[in-house]
Image (spheres, rainbow, N blue to C red):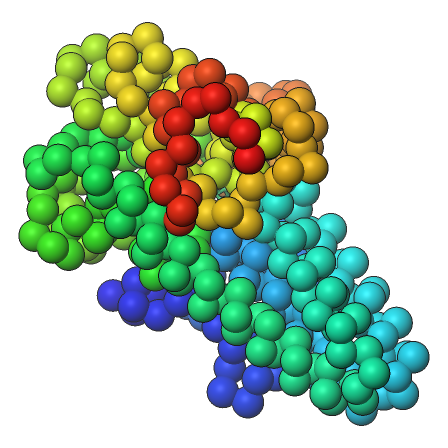
Length: 344
Ligand code: MRU
């Protein structure tokens, strides 16, 4: 249970580096990677060693701090220049989860507020700020889980997509929070887990977390959700999110939109679990959300013993899609259960 009791991202004991569970290897291998520079942090986020919107934000915040710590003996001007450069490297790692830029900008605001202090003082303030972001996420996840649990009855059957659990956040997660919290109180659930092509966060991470928590879990390919919903008895779909626009349009892992369309067709409530840092009021609608495009080799080769498609085939590999607010039954945040029309 190593990665479910520990946070997926934390500082090492002397505060000079980040220790992160390497989520690319789970569940076959549980390994920790050490991130010492802004380049290491950006690389871990780009390659999804560190993933999930809130977890990316926490890692980015610690990344800004470890940069400050590494440069703390420099003259103030050079220190600030290095800090700004490193913050920009981290912020550019992935475009869709707003938690990344939100965390980096919050850290740089903190640095600006302490600008009159020597570099070591600014670094100390940044460490406290990163720890605050981390602690706040733990509290937010707990409240989301409590709020979400009110929507489920004992014995409920749900479908989930991607991974919005402890590995994507700290502790309880968002989309999986109600299940994990309810299970810890003796409730029973049946979770149907979309494998989540192409990077298999459902099969590798969500199935791992739910199974280890003792929740009755069934893995299925993404294209089996319609079949399962048509059979009846599904009480809810539960997903996390990477960026929610002011009108409630929601970017989440590719395939979420398809699941929401199915849920509407079959009359299944579709719930989005959203920490408030994932709401981007600068995006009026989902059309303003930038969708990350990734390498085609993730589709054709990455998780296969040998490449499965013709060599040189063109691939479309958006990492996220946008579910229109009209398909979302409720957005559950730490403050409560929000229902349409959404106006964040
Ligand atoms: O590409 P990933 O694995 O970082 O995508 C993650 C998701 O889409 C999650 O559903 C989302 O970040 C919510 S995590 C609480």
